[in-house]
Length: 202
Image 1 (cartoon, rainbow, N blue to C red):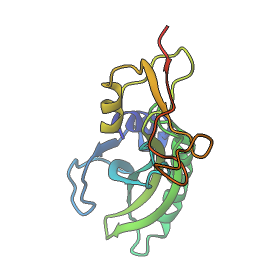
Image 2 (cartoon, one colour):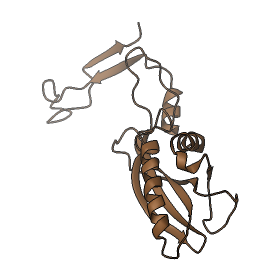
Image 3 (cartoon, rainbow, N blue to C red):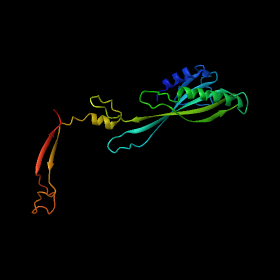
Image 4 (tube, rainbow, N blue to C red):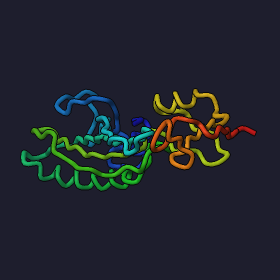
């Protein structure tokens, strides 16, 4: 999942952060890396999980990508009572910004997953809000007369490289109608009674 569209969306739609929204692949809540004012948010891409392909002759998997928005707020008291109220308002802004948002044209809209307290000390509290989106790995069949989309898997790339099917040769060995009792009591007896070809190219 690309971070840039998510960061732009949160910056534009969550005014409480005052554009203090950053991103990365890893982030330690116990360190003050950017020394940013608070509240601030860090968008962190976690990874993905895939379901097995339901089809036997084509690979098409549903992939779920997960992203965390880690929010830092000032902690004015040891219990975090004031921070909890601020986080409640920030969560509402994040829901309005991200739930239903599509990071890319191929993604399903983002959905909310869960939240957790990551850190609390005398200076700050860090809370994680998790969102996810799903997409299909493996393209759908193109409509009649439409070009194929680019291959997404090795199977699709290999099939795209095959020459076009020009026709089908068929050999017919009847089961019972013309069985030769000298060769077999029941058919098929191994003799080809009919040969035919169906041309598919004009």
